[in-house]
Length: 134
Length: 134
Image (cartoon, rainbow over the protein chains, first blue to last red):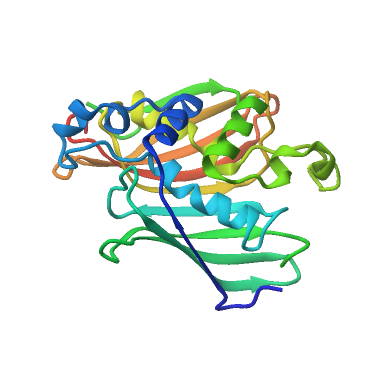
């Protein structure tokens, strides 16, 4: 059973192919994510990953690993502090902040760091229900 | 230019094919979303859509329509109040709550309603930067 303070970390990267597929299934074809010429005219200079796609690493972690299958999302806060880029290496960190055994819910701090410089790129917090694992 | 109180609405549905593609690109293959037999054993009785996929309608709306291309996500809060199901008809509603013209940012209330009964399924709030449109 998970306890307060338990932590799970996972390194990951997102490819431009994943960005293009996400654009198709979400309908978000904002050129900031897809068009290198458009992105060159922005402060980012190159395409950035959709925030919802970068943040979805927590959908994977909470839904498959920590606490795992059966997890139901009740809430997610995402603070996008810095842009995320295709093929960069990131580390997602999930930390249990609070647990309610009666309701089978947990509040989990969710953060993504750039592995190359240690800077935080996404911070936030999830609330999860998992009647088998919490 | 957008003003406080401006509102954008869009009806949408999400197919099980979109759910399966999202599972592949996010890595979230939680059986709650993919396995009808597993889902039958839960209070939902049938597979529910990934919260990140349902919420991504706001990635589309804010990034392509309201305010539109060039939008950069600064923050998103998602409160998942009820499950979302494939092929159901939903309405996403984005409402401008506050604007900072100097910083070119807006706070936008983001809500999804079930069209069949009017109940809210997702509530939340986005903060967006768009240097051309805000």
